[in-house]
Amino acid sequence: MIFITNIINFLLVVFFLNSCASLPGINKDVVKKRSNEKLINSEYTINDIGINIIKINDLSTKDMNFYNQKKIEEIDYKVKKFEDIYDYKYEYILGPADSISIDLTDTDDLDNSYLIDQNGMIDLPFVGKIKLDGLTLNDAQNILIEVIREFYKNPDLQVNIDEFNSSKVYIVGAVRNQITINLNQKPIKLIEAAIQANFNPSAADKLFGTKGFLRRDNKVYKINLANAFSGKDEKENFYLKKDDVIFIDRNSDAIHVFGEVSKPGVYFPNIGYSLTELLSTSGLNQLTSNAKKVYVIREKFHSFLEVDVFQLDIRNPINLIAGKKFMLQAKDIVFVPATEIVKWNRTISLLLPQTDLFSSYNPIIQEGIKSNSANLTE
Image 1 (cartoon, rainbow, N blue to C red):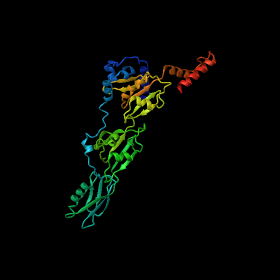
Image 2: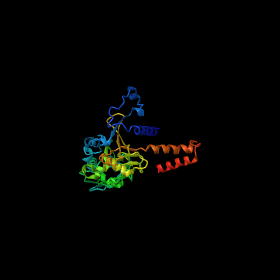
Image 3: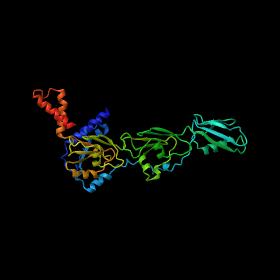
Image 4: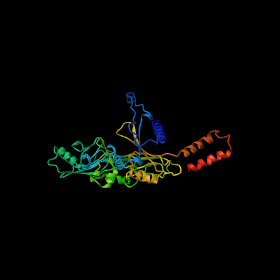
């Protein structure tokens, strides 16, 4: 129901935009005052949305740079400011289902392989249970030496890991190969894990993403796989830790394209899409599109219920230069409406099979309308 409501609201916005293209320049102060009652009940309609119409053709170079560079701080997926991530030095952490071997010099009383149980403990002969869960190999060896000192004088103890079963990291979400990676004593970095998940940094497939989240030690961090592969900062390619979960969001970078284009859908701006480039990529339908009204709808995240709507008039091909200077951003919505005659013919084509409209007229007229409708919508 929420999805249907959102679709209806979007179509209402589009309808409004399609009828207000004549508004000049930037329409400021259009955000309506909202009552305290609405703030409490959160009951909003399309009429509560503030809409600023901004004509791209009229923007100065300074204004263009302002909108190109204005990005919300939330879209900052760098992790280099977190020391507990990029300064982390990998060591294998023991846990349940791991198997270790113990070699005690001068006696074979304890020499054997031991499976760490579900409580994180091993059971040593003559000694009893010792908890090793959550320890590195060196820490486990030191703990064991301290415990068996009570039974053996100056013990010389060697501990090795026979089976690595407890330490894993997970890569899920919008990647080609959602995987669980078993860790061992060899460290693994983000890039290597991403390659195992069949991540391709140069691909722009709408089914997959580049940005997402790292969950580590009950904390969540924003990450960008593309940052790690770009090589601009080696700290972005950090070591993974036991129980890390990397979730890649398919739509974190999405640009949605609707309307009179041959390839509507989802596009990703990782390589930097200008409006002109996206129109070229998506295939503007020159027969049915209203070239006067190409819209980019962008939510103003620093304002409440307010959007900027950028309009480009490309009836004059020279204006495509302005479109090339206008850079799209993540979560932008690009909409190309149909011409009035196309909308009329589509309406008629829907009405004719369902009603007796025009039934009293010459059949030739009806056939002509159907034929024109088909030609315009192809």
